[in-house]
Image 1 (cartoon, rainbow, N blue to C red):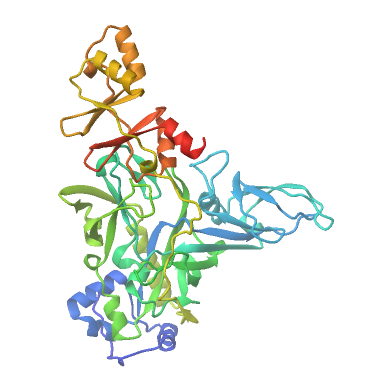
Image 2: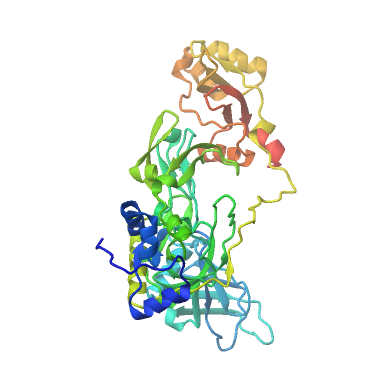
Length: 505
């Protein structure tokens, strides 16, 4: 970074004054990373005097994204009821030919491989896409079906309209289960063998203005490679816990797939990666201090996604410095961690925005209304209770690995069960044996339990939703799950029959 030689400025400045400097080509602009280096070397007061604007950036999967399009009226006209573009189901939120492409909607012919995010990227790139639509027909909209090919130039409007972007904080995810799971945090290996996180840390826009002094309705931003605007707080916005989000809008016809990319998460679904950056005007010393925040000062929770409940266990707190190092420590366990977002592209967002401001191609706007600071994100109100494994699990009939097959057969008969759980001297799970296993063993003349028991056992925990346990049994073609605690001790068993009785299956 070159030496900055500027005249001392007042103790405060306005956006109008900064925009005047941008017009003259005199504005001093640093990326968030450059700002932190300046504060570190020269102090926050010098940084405030020398810097007018700090640019930020982030590039990650933002599932609550999509695009509003208007396709124009056909002849004869149609009032669309159902629509598909490249076989992706398209939402019809309003009038006859207004449509909304949701980033997570998946193709009916290529599920998990192609979806709304890819469709938006294809349109941004000028590719031709197929539209199929159906309607019930009315006197003024008599057409019942439609099939045509379109590009973005054929659309009257093509606006990115994202309900929740630019997360101020995001969890770091691990999986405590004995099996791999596939989530919106990517592929999580069993027994916490990996961790994933998202976000740009000290480059994150909302971390550099955490009290939203300069960010609100009407704030001009970098969005997908073009200029866009904040149109309000994003869904699930909660300022009190520094979990702010933004609702944003921009003209997708001017965007670039360099900063707007469709993506697929294995066995989870599709999404849209969005490049978003906000210029932070350094209006006062306080904003200069906030824009100096470093990765070691930004913390997030390590959350166990192996527990399929809203209140997943929080196992530790880690800083973004630790996350970016490639490994974190939870208890006495060191875990490799990888990012789902691109720090390289986030830096490119901040750098591109910096050049726009320096070259007079981007001016700052004061928000007409600041983002709310007092709202609280509420969980869903549920009028029906959700059954969990603990609600139906039965006492498990157990045995030791050293027992004979004939003794296990007698236990199955006397206890009227189809599954015997094998445990060690501490009551921890070591295997499972079924009545079918025992019947076959006796027919083949086998006498040792160790020769017939299943050692790789699919399990559940008491706080797992019963529906999840049911899917697990169907996925593995089994009829029972031992219930264990975090230490592997057997607490009980749940069978497909128990599930069917409660869920009415």
